[in-house]
Amino acid sequence: MDLYEHQARQLFADHGIAVPDAEVVDDPSAVHAAAERLGGRVVVKAQVKVGGRGKAGGVKVAEDPAAAVVTARRILGMDIKGHPVRTVMLAQPVDIGEEFYAGYVLDRAAGTFLAIASAEGGMDIEEVAATRPEAVARIHVDPAEGVSEAVAARIAVAASLPPETAPVLQALWQVLTAEDALLVEVNPLVRTTDGRILALDGKVTLDDNAAFRQPRRDADSVDPHGDPLEAAAADKGLNYVRLDGEVGIIGNGAGLVMSTLDVVAGCGARPANFLDIGGGASARVMADGLTVILSDPAVKSVFVNVFGGITACDAVADGIVQALDSVHLTKPLVVRLDGNNAARGRAILDGRAHPMVQQVTTMDGAADRAARLAQGGH
Ligand code: GDP
Ligand code: MN
Image 1 (cartoon, rainbow, N blue to C red):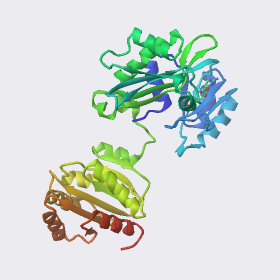
Image 2: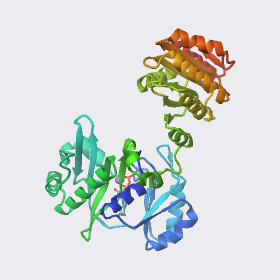
Image 3: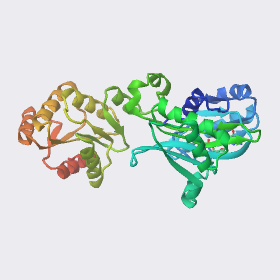
Image 4: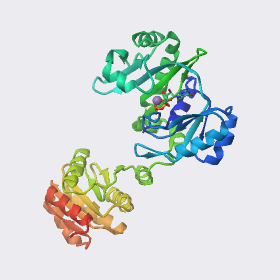
């Protein structure tokens, strides 16, 4: 899960990284007082989970509280790369001397962590990385050793960062490990004209698989603007991602679900979601999955694509039949069962003879049927 800047900033502060004072506001009527509390002159920053806010006009300095209100109103009306701005952060402006880049990321290919740092941070870091890769230091960090003083000093030297940044590099490693993050990034990390080292922006991606051992997370990081269907699915323990199409998708196995999305798209329709019900495919999981998908008003048809393996098709068919007893099926359901015990599974569904359920034996055929049903055909 990606965090908003203001959430990342809080984690940085918790681990001893200096950040400017700031307040988060979602209502323009609260901006004036917040700006006054911060000293009048503020930076107004869009809170969206996407980079490049500065270039998109989502980061602006306001000279006084009245100007902050005007600026906040304008930024709160923005859409940055498809992300509507619903909150802004007001931060005390600082006089930037130099802008650096510092971060750690899980390097899956190398099976370890990678420190990335540059003395040329700021809004053009992507261009720097692309045109002058030698200006960006990349150093693997042994997770067992971590970032000791010596390692931090080595990263700073490799990236030509001033030695005062080394403690921040150590603290940032603490953020990564203590918070179970997959990525932490500060851009810019700045040296102010009066010599302080401050994190002016923050990006953190938390490892959702570690949520069970991060009790703080539930309270701290719930996203009030997150997708309600994804939240409902997460509550039920479903592996669901909402997309913006009209064909609901349920499948077993992430690979099969991914190819189902492709096949549905190939039929000229758009998948409404990713939902992998994995092995097992109990009636409970099937009912929960259908409930979430059917509550998406954009969904016009649902495609259940199952390849029976260890979980045989008859068990899945039993699950579907039981789910049909607890879910009011308001949209047509196309089921394709293949693999282990497919014939038995199909017979079970035929026996149920639900008027909204159709079976098609091939994946392509079923995708085509679901796509046409979504477009109002038969
Ligand atoms: P991003 O574009 O989404 O990465 O947003 P940032 O938070 O990094 O802000 C973009 C740029 O705005 C930074 O690179 C800074 O140059 C500038 N900026 C952000 N906060 C301040 C501030 O407090 N003072 C000054 N002078 N510039 C700032
Ligand atoms: Mn930034």
